[in-house]
Image 1: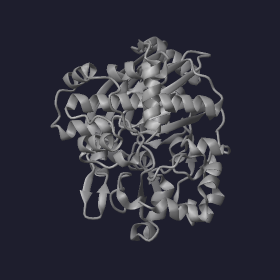
Image 2 (image 1 turned 120 degrees about the vertical axis):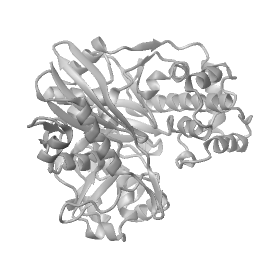
Image 3 (image 1 turned 180 degrees about the vertical axis):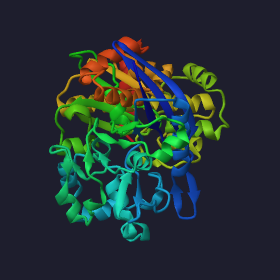
Image 4 (image 1 turned 45 degrees about the vertical axis):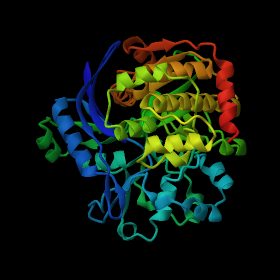
Length: 479
């Protein structure tokens, strides 16, 4: 048995998990969990990256001696370093308003259709490309010598080494998914200096060893290697989808976001795919994550925060008894991107659409979960059609796999069986990549077989409400 520390950073919390892997065995335990609280300062919304790093160090201390460390996190955001390697201010949060209207500036130089054909990335206002365009006149960018995406920034602090892990780089809208290298022409036309980025790394590549100061801080004995994993948390989560060999599956990575789609061998770069807002992000072993971003459980998280954090189990039980599909909203609507007043904004969206307005927390929660299930249905059906890739089963991984009501509704909406679990998919995918470096796990299929044998999974069969879901979808599309 070998032990691996998986640092898994989400938009609302971080955790350090310890995976123990041996022949036919994979055990995951939590060493430390800590909040991720963005801070609004006069210049905008910022990540408290120093608090995150402190949480990582505390987590490594709690993990005890390990054979390797890997870091995954959310995508698109970055830190800027000066010539001395010092951080130039806290990283900007992707929900900050600085990118409003920036996409139109970019498309004036590189039309949206051409940009998609070259990079395969769906439009999202916070893509790194738009962030860099928005920051063009900022003093920080003028003085920057290096740009590191969030997991690469923390890896740099742990090891002193710099690199840009490929699965996360593919979310910048500056990578060609066909060549799996930088889109040099696009960057040049938009005046983006690719020299800011450190050299690309592949999942499984060495990323240095813990610095002596980190060993002293954590109490670990060196050398402790750091391994580049699928550092975009969705890449790690998809690697941990417990699909059986030959299974035609779709996945939904659920948490603050829902990422619903397919694992493909090649990108889909058609104009129809762009119009449907699908993205082609890079995964492990030459795969492509063909998916659509959906607002996800962020909607419920914000409502729960507004309601003073009531008991979630009781809230979900009450929601299960509320009328089904009474009101639905577009869970991918950018109107729900910013924090604050989420219950009121959902009610306003229902009112504007001429639907009954949910009032109680149970009614609003049911509206959110029905809407998410409907968005999952639309994304999976669109992906099947656009990629010509039929699906027989849907795997729900991540935090939403623990939400039985959401999983049942997703099975009903899709008309397909849903296999829920593992809930800590990103951490498990992180661990599997590290274990591969020691020869304890083979290829992607071998890792998935290990997960199927060792992780608790729950299966939900669809119930016969297809006509009601079709009517709700038609109602939403008529808006």
